[in-house]
Length: 168
Image (cartoon, rainbow, N blue to C red):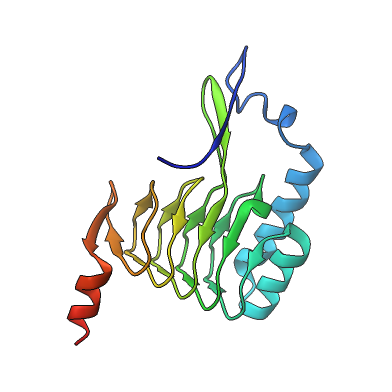
């Protein structure tokens, strides 16, 4: 189960009431910073922008490829470890707005993780050190360290032990 805080709402759906949960000005600023960051070709500059302006925790030498979309409402709840690659056009969400509630959860991506292009990381998920996420995967639950996962729904392709045996 993902680790999210759940907030029930009454009345119209939770997305209709978005600015009761997060400041309009925070979202406005974040959207501008993220749109700039999605196109910046220099990793050090992109990481600096996200660390400084969005308060994201990004380890040294981590790379967010062209067009990676980070959460516009709660980017400070995303932690990316050292020397990790997030592939082209992937999305990292720390929130989800539903009809009768909204949920917020930390996303923790370990060291030396490889996330393939067009993947979606849902809130409340931890991806362990050295894990590999295949392109196009929807990560809806934790990924143990060293595992290779893929698909929608996400499934284990290789465990850490199987991955180590393949490399021998």
